[in-house]
Image 1 (cartoon, rainbow, N blue to C red):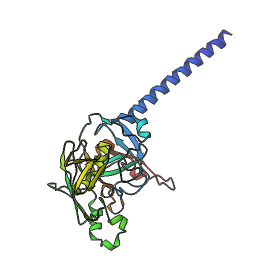
Image 2: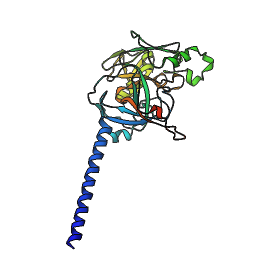
Image 3: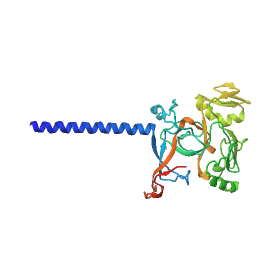
Image 4: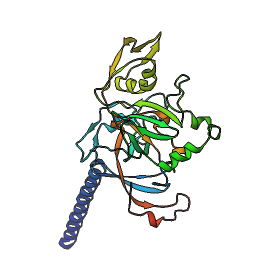
Length: 294
């Protein structure tokens, strides 16, 4: 009997130790997931040739700083305060970023959906003035190449008639402004504390951003802009925003169509392809394993 009790005690101690080790590993994995790295699978070819369908990428959260927020509130589609811890460096133009898509239900307003992610390249930073001239991205005062130049030049060579209307016509979808995939802007990308004059044009550009920041209603009537039914002549932005573009510029739902991205929605910088496989056959793309993302 003593021998049996001794074995039971040893077994119980062993099980408890295993459970403790499992809990510690789980806490470490969750900590890594929240503060250091996350893995995301690429579902489309909108970032090709840099990223293709079936690539699994590691996203570095330490680079720009991990986020802290009430995940349960976001799952209920409620606006919640998002805090970002200090990062190692600032977001740069041409960084490939993973972010929560700001329009999970409709392009008419900005919302948070924790389970819907996009990955695009940062084209414009807060404070930039961006244009698309004959299909090519331009930032005032910046000479560096932006995005995938080859795809932009393919757009430049195409005639309007070769595009579907849903591809050719772009944000802000206004009959007077009439921007399109070949000629777009100039669009100022707001940064926190910027003040803008509220006229019809800026109403078209920034309505969704202001309504998201204020959780209210912005209207344009009789040559005046109203916020929550009160007339306003100017507006101070509270947040930073970014312009995001897909490398496959001829076929990418990006800021040309849905507008600017709030900084709070950015998860982190895509760093490494750690695995890649064909989505249909499961065959591995061995040559893509452990490639850094540029």
